[in-house]
Amino acid sequence: MKAIILKKYGLPKVLEVGEVDKPAPKDREVLVKIHAASINDWDWGLVRGKPFVIRLFFGLRKPRVRILGADIAGTIEAVGSKVTSFKPGDEIYCDLSECGSGGFAEYVCIPEKIPALKPSGMSFNDAAALPHAGLLALQGLVEMGKVKSGQRILINGAGGGVGTLGIQILKSYNLKTTGVDSAEKLDLMKSLGYDEVMDYKKLDFTGTGEKYDLILDTKTNRSAVKYIRCLERNGTYITVGAWMNRLLDIFLTGPLISLFTGKKLKVLFHQPNKGLEQLSKLAEKGQIQPVVDGPYEFEKIPELLQYFGEGRHKGKIVVEVGDSE
Ligand SMILES: NC(=O)c1ccc[n+]([C@@H]2O[C@H](COP(=O)([O-])OP(=O)(O)OC[C@H]3O[C@@H](n4cnc5c(N)ncnc54)[C@H](OP(=O)(O)O)[C@@H]3O)[C@@H](O)[C@H]2O)c1
Image (cartoon, rainbow, N blue to C red):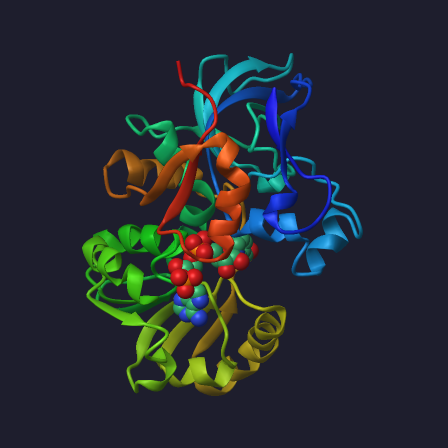
């Protein structure tokens, strides 16, 4: 089968388009024919082996993961002898980051507990754009952030995967929403429903004097003290992504600050695939529809990863892997 192969860490040009053996499912695994995959920060980190902590888990000098790709949508082609939840022909989607990647290939074998049925009526391309970013948004805003109608909410990095899905997850609440991202993405963000948009290159949202009940940040790059200042009383700040020193700052000072101010600073640790059924329900109701950058051809994955790393994408980059017939 064709696959994008990672042999050493480096910029995405180190990736090779090649052939590897088609896998066979073990007793409790399903074999998925992949139709579409999307690109995440997870892949960008793994290809470069950065930040360094990635190498502690995935190989210090050489990557142990041969094939990247976390988000996929596809059809189950075969099941292992002890599989009870799926059958050949089922259309599924999921995030492979909890079982070691492998989405940038024609087939993958995964434990049966990982996938969920693809939202009915949704294309494979759209479904592949949902799991990783959609669940970061759902877990951040709803589960950890406990969003409520009447609140004022800000999403930082609002034009990326998490922010474009996050605003749609919030549709059923009556909120005042602010999205922060670069100038090229502001029109898209307005069209998705953000009440206010801000260009982070021109304005620092922590310095405007405005206060929010809930902040979801995909690009934490300031000190905990700055975030505290722009939270309402009892407000919550949640980071899903940042440089390690910033994450540590929030993680370590958060509980102390909370003790004295009643405001909360939290770090979200992504739980892959947790809440996928809930995401499916939102998709089936037509409440969420990913913003797809693409679809692109499979062979373009190395250059698309570079495009992702440079932050030029809007929403989710989707790649068509194989036909869905
Ligand atoms: N917590 C966890 O367990 C976990 C797990 C997986 C991933 N993550 C993290 O979750 C985040 C994924 O977000 P995503 O999928 O939405 O990424 P994304 O698609 O890359 O979107 C991020 C957006 O932020 C914008 N941006 C860059 N610098 C910014 C700044 N200083 N201020 C405001 N916006 C800025 C980018 O635009 P420009 O580049 O055009 O400026 C881009 O539109 C990543 O940080 C990733 O590391 C966390």
